[in-house]
Length: 413
Image (cartoon, rainbow, N blue to C red; front, side, top):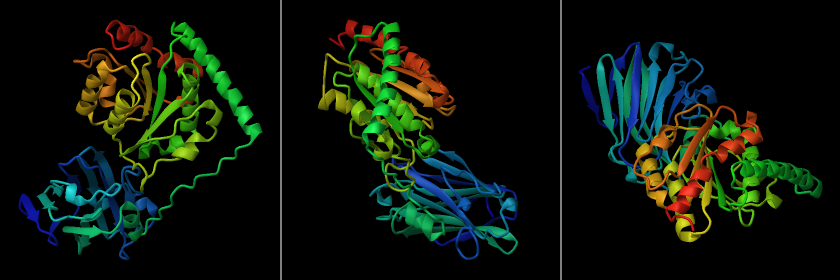
């Protein structure tokens, strides 16, 4: 094999007998692609669901195929050819789009495989109305491995594609939430206790009389699944709702969720909080819903639009508590959004969940070009292990100073 080979659709070439190869899928547009690998046997089906490698399951039982990078415009897999299970005949690489988007909007889509013998590249330039594509495959041929350019469209999105390879896909059930007076009374007592802790923290920070429009933003990307299933997000919601109950003029909390896409959910008060997360967005959805990627910029823009244009107020700031478990890659765009928003009466309190890639959020205190420092960030290893008192003290750490400067510079009346 020469150092660089370009394949046309249907073409194939030998890549190696053993060793490690890398497979990179790259594109130029702003589209959000879900790229996966399916390891199948001679029957064209995966031996089990463990043999689908994607953003939420980064390897398979033999650890022969690993997803090593998943950025805005690039996904990289490594394959240890000799570690592939003997029952695996083909490794298919696929890409899907969220919602109604089609590959006609995706520019510069290529798949490149690199080995010690060189590179093989296949550019997919004839896709049109497809929402899912089988890009290429690595497969056994006698005692060697070959690479084939496929570029075949597939009806539907990731769910039917995965099922075609034998992956069992079950959408999570949304349990019904009983609404009975005894349950509500118990939980209202819990919120009342949280409100007392909020009040103590506000008093300590000398902002007990301040009012604000309070909002919470929840990361709903695939890596957050466990936190939703364990009830951590519902408990976080309740703790923030207590803030709104104390600070908001009508005690109402505005709520957004975001993954690859975002949604503004129904606002809520303490009278109607029981099971709110289960009713509204119970778990991140790999298939449909908001998608499972990380895309902070659109939801941030929608929040600004809501408080600056839809419901403007010069007398009352918007206080945004933004939960994310990282995977932040749009550093420049997020920095620009925060810089542009620094003249508006919006304060952003980012809370990291776990020790992940928080990108620009870790550098907020040094972010240049802003009219006023309008954001704060801290990360928590385990949200459930942080006391209410500590959480509220940290949430209100920089907000009082922002209020003072916002009034001095005329952002707030």
